[in-house]
Image (cartoon, rainbow, N blue to C red; front, side, top):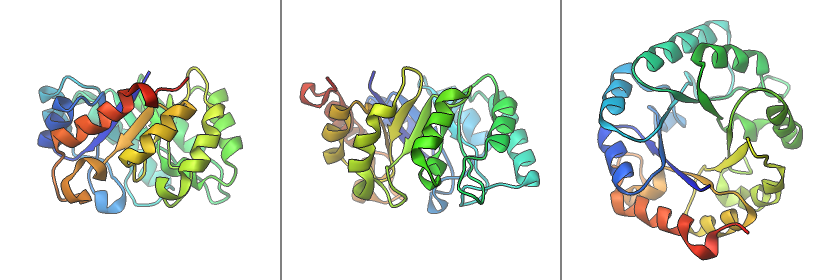
Length: 232
């Protein structure tokens, strides 16, 4: 089933995404740092205004690592966000060796439970992508992996991500993002990757300072639902 997830930083963004046909929003702050944990007050306003599922980012620094103090703070933030009405999350960590940091992710998963969650683009920093995906598929964990197929975004990695589409399982899917553009939709969906994650593409001029625009969300949704773009 196709899913269009839109990155939002305000209630206005989220309502525009909903009107444009988005299936879910990812709530973040600090897009200059590739997305950080949003405020609890904003999450509560969104939960009260929106009928779409909300996945909130859990990330305190602009890399994909954490330490004991940071993880403890994230666990508290997850619980506060759940109390504010958020029931789904986005997070992910890699360790110094380039392996997914399952000890940290298990702690955060337990703090956020019960919750669906997306493994953030920490996956694209893993030293062995195939091994990392297999670990995710074998463990109780995320239902989606946000990936560009490359560290530098979809422009560089879409062909790789298309080749990896066969890794997907019934319960673990790729969520393609990181510079998604409309021209990426057809090759991704034709390969079987039908969950898409967009931010700049739904803002005029592609800048994070611009608000989400309903007609740009609708254009991506139409592209996702086009018969020629559907996976076989």
